[in-house]
Image (cartoon, rainbow, N blue to C red):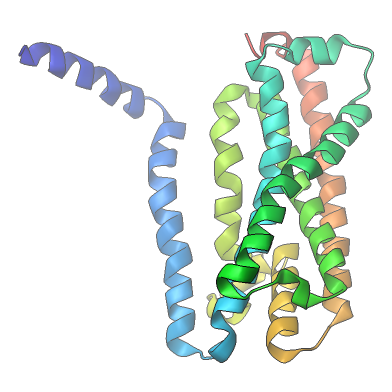
Length: 263
């Protein structure tokens, strides 16, 4: 065994990590987010008995709906990334297709990829755990719609980054939603967060959506104001995402970097 060869190969990867801030942040990011999320979950169950007899139902319902949000965003990102991986990105933008048509097509198509994952998980949860998201009733339609719009918005923001910074921005596609899980209060009420984080969380539609989900399941009450507020915020974020996408596209076209995508 030639130790100098092992040392040389190890040294190569060391310098790769040392010289790349995205790689360093990626290594720090995942453990930190896990501690952040599960720390607040543990704190909630330590100081509160709100869920009491319906713990499995509330947690599993939140997990299913959060996965719906996750799949919405990732489906949008994946379809865009597949254009890059297949080296079809340049063809996409030189074809007589408007940006609005690309956004609309990806938004509408992403729902099919999302439902492929959601439907089996929803069905499995009923016989295995006796939990059905349909217990939420009619508000479920509006809550899912709000989650989908916000998920697509995150997809838009990530694809904007891909256009602006290139494939190196790809890691953000996988990390963005995990970062929002603790702030979105998916598994616990907003009161568990420190006050300064509550201020940040309240500007996210996720807080209002998941707070209302818990309100329906635990208190058997429907607050249409929270549902409406979450929907309006999701739409506003979507408009913001579209604007950012147009800005990123215009900037990339002026710099001539679109032609290098996927090469």
